[in-house]
Length: 232
Image (tube, rainbow, N blue to C red):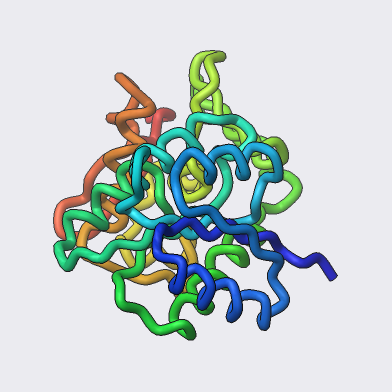
């Protein structure tokens, strides 16, 4: 059985030791880093299955580490859980907008963190489409689920795992409206932690990456979103 590798990044040694201990008890392999530079170097040298990343780090902060992980093809699909000591929801929203998949506020319970880790790893490994849907083409958009690649008019678009699943779910059924709850269940994870604007933030980032084609994702006021039916 594969032992997944978790990279824990935080500048509080006691917290890192505690998290490392409990993750190891759950049979995860764990690497640690106390600053952004070290975290990036370790992630590139040995790509983890998930990163637990503190928002406030010395030198390069967590948001910049997240951005760089997402911009590197080796680590662009790695799930990221961001830690924040601040109470404001805006910090979580900013983290999601920078490519994080989830967030958890300090102080947190170890059981809650372990559950989040298991959820994100499971979500990254499941929800694969049927064989005949492995490569999905809608107009000039191609979504390759085998390679986890998206191209628009022949140009590659780099997406996070959550963004990829969200786009694939919407584009697989053009014209069908999805509620935010359905998208959380189908595209993110059935037991994902829901915060206000979670799906909205991911959609906003996805639209930005699609550029002028971002309007393909239409807002259904009071409900959620749908992908434009280009056949009409």
